[in-house]
Image (cartoon, rainbow, N blue to C red; front, side, top):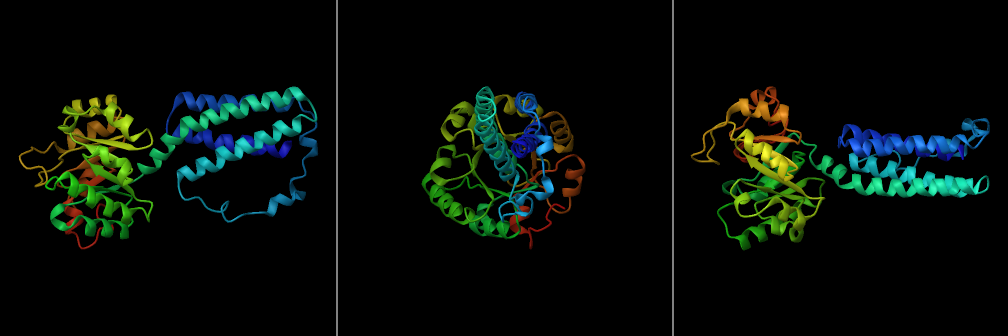
Length: 325
């Protein structure tokens, strides 16, 4: 009983930290905190647990499996600890029946509360992992998209976007399938440009939409089509557009072009002031884009642009490694 109480509260504490500091959800954080306190109150009614503890004699103390010794990402930490807490509470539920059947009912209610918390946290945690990047590589059709993707993967880039506005939808789909086959062997996040209706079939992690796309399709429809677990990014060129993107339900926005760029011919640069304002006020991840390269990346980072997207800089650079640092 004592071992599983410790295991449950330890797991819940890790989950609470993720809810509080990573996905920053006040309601879920309170729900996990309340569950920890409820568990403590229930266990206090069982006397003698601390006196029964023999930590240094526990055979499980020296057991350390390969899976326990490593974590691939934040999502794996979340899954390990939410399951740890669920399993421990199940043990408490079963063994407490030997002491007090009423306790078993209490622990069962807690277990189902935890299942609900897991459901609510799973997608936000997965998204937080996908949005944990500094360099965002967007392919340049002139440079060979698949070649750029391979170079980005070799450099350890965490997110890539397939962009080509000059080919047909069918041609883009065939290209996206080839790109997905390359990327799926890694943990790299794969974003489609514009074609939200291909996300599921291609196996992409999300879609990036421009302001023109928002004139013909609602974010709500895109979300319903691709699901809550996929990312939706929106290009913005003003603070008003950035605010609107948040209200519409974007997972991240790009702000730009920061500097003049051939990728956006005829569009005036928005400059670093807009980037500073967006980073300081917008609550979702902000990606700086437009004319950023080795020579000016430091200025962007100093302005708060810790997520930077590059197109030509990635395709033309001899090495993508250390491109913005």
